[in-house]
Length: 267
Image (cartoon, rainbow, N blue to C red; front, side, top):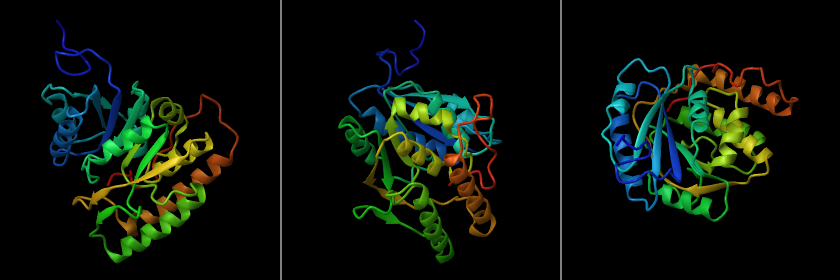
């Protein structure tokens, strides 16, 4: 009997929840993060699956996923040739088919116990549930420099113009009604750091409220973000999003994504 694409040999039920992990050169952080996520999902009382999107990695990221041991949580690899975390997340969301979907960062900086809260909110009728480090009940371990904290404050102010009422657009922990996520993913064109802003803005534009939940968040080593090198590109991305959201819909033949203006958006 051929292996089930949805988990171990004992079940062929399709997943109720699929989680996407965008990954670019994550051979060091992915094994531990994937182990944590699979352990968490294995305790769920329903079928789950993980999709790792290899975003042109030049290390062993793809090999790690291909050789991942089979277990109660299905783990599969897909590739995204377009550069940028936004493009990778879009590719992963479009490859899902579950009623509920989400994405998390490979470093698992957000404590995975928040999955229980997010999924409960989705079951109660929320369509977009995101982790927020700015939530009053969140616990945030932050080792960022004062310069980076100032840059984050400025970004939140600009993002707030596009997604009003959301205090943290950038936490890499977001869950959705699956149908809504796939509908919105088709429209996404931002590939870099600010892709979350376009994603949430389009969800709000479809009439879906964004529910922010508290998280435990740990500042993980290995960040690729540099305020001096990346600030200009981020501001330009936000400007493109602002223009795009106010423009008439483009023809279907137009590209669905834009190359990132540095950085590619990975933490």
